[in-house]
Length: 304
Ligand code: KMH
Ligand code: ZN
Image (cartoon, rainbow, N blue to C red; front, side):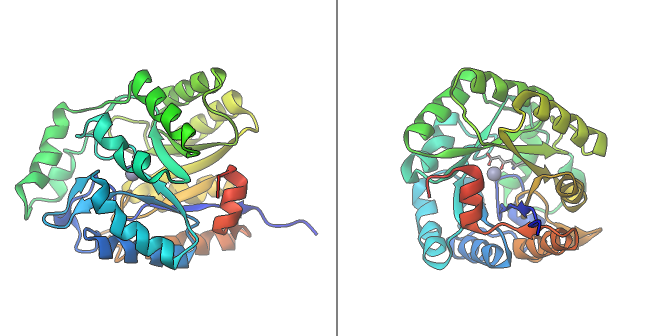
């Protein structure tokens, strides 16, 4: 009897794009991040992509001291694969961004595959009241912000992470990022199975249309053949629709409040676990099975 395809759900519970005034459900303290992550894992997420925030004002931080308390709680409560950000916030230096992954040497770390504009300022139209001035500045300053990921930056993270046994969630926000990834694969710095997280709908990256998804898919197929694992991250309201289209075509999926605060028009998600449950229901209706953490480790050849 043929067995169902296993789909890896990655959940990103907090990130560095959204700010506390945008949603009361955005986790900011270590306990909130731990609870959000553990609930997401219990709902079916095999991989947890994690950022930290300073509980004082919810500002993103890459200080490992803010990661440690929630990492301890998550590891004690789940078998989920830990994936630490090296993207941090687009406002941070690369040195700052690398600190958690270099300190904790996780099974997976994110790696952003090119420099780009990162337009957060359109959210100023949607969210007008901010509790903290940094929140407004974070959006406003993105008019003149380059999310810097030079070849040197990428190579540094890649080499140091690989030395630690960390493998990567390669975040590709546009077609050129796939070519950058292929460049590193050609040089032998990236080996399969390559976990390609294709990102849609960030201003500065590729759009959120099914044609965009198809073009990324065709390009990745041509560049990486069967040595990659495709995953879909749709920003904002595109999260569930694009994950559904991608999954039907063979992708893994990523959800969580880092990428979208929403469950529906004008309806905030009360947790990342709610989004995991929604996509899980869809995946199971499509006759796929949700991968366990150990199955994800096997699919992505992680160190375990
Ligand atoms: N915020 C996402 C669009 C990272 O942490 O390296 C991409 C991301 C970046 O997760
Ligand atoms: Zn992230």
